[in-house]
Length: 387
Image 1 (cartoon, rainbow, N blue to C red):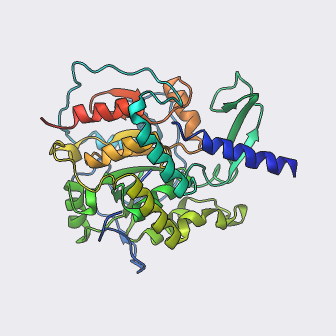
Image 2 (tube, rainbow, N blue to C red):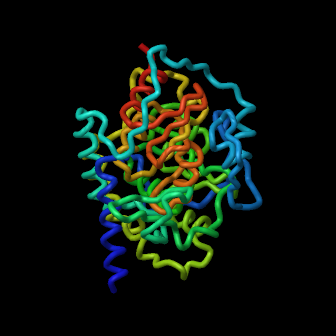
């Protein structure tokens, strides 16, 4: 009984620790309805950074010891990186006055950003901190060795090391899944949250308001519809509309092999459609409906860029503004999920040599890597807009 109480207390403390360090969106006519849509075979997209071709297996991603020019994802997903190098990309330049900021974990670096953090924290509360933790989140120890490599959360005398008790041997995609979406849509948000809960890496192709940008046109050419979310799994050749179907597919394909190892009720904030849609809509309104429109001064060729690499998770108040900026600029980006208990937290520490901190952005178009949410947003504004 004492252990149960202690776990509950630490869980609340862990959630609270997100509030001062990254959430989401709705748009009429863009969401998934109650009807069912049959899965279809994914077609190859001419503007895709990752070739969408059926794979015969879904296997665990291997972690290489080297980081290639396309970013750390080359090590995680070698198949994706090899195909992406066959395409030519637009040229972008780094602003002459740009300097990489020093990382300062769990710190509000600018008081002007306080309203944004408070709004993101309110949205986090409305969604009951959904996607803060991976499925089967478990505290391994309260007293991790200070000299031990990898992530742990230091709170007073405690050094809490956590993981998932059910995802260690779950199937992992060889190539990142692809999701056509935009930030404010509550239907898209449900799917994004599930990818975090399952600790999946996903390439997002923003379609602001569902009907703007090249990715919306690409979606229309593929399917004859401009409905989001639209999920493409190049590992199985399956693609589908309908957020309910996508959520079910993700759990069945990339969830624990043994469904009896976890309580499915743990997923109710996502799977209970009425609750998730209403609260996600409220969260989007609180955040001023982010990503509903393509930014007017965004470069016309943004959708043709190499996908940027963003380490973070849906619920983080600090990751949220970066996600919104990427969506409004219609920039493709690969989200490497780092919710609490994620194995990617250790990988990020190994990747950067720093303490764990999100958001962390890797831009393969310029070679820049940086922490700090406000500075990342400023960087994106300078590089991917026109006067």
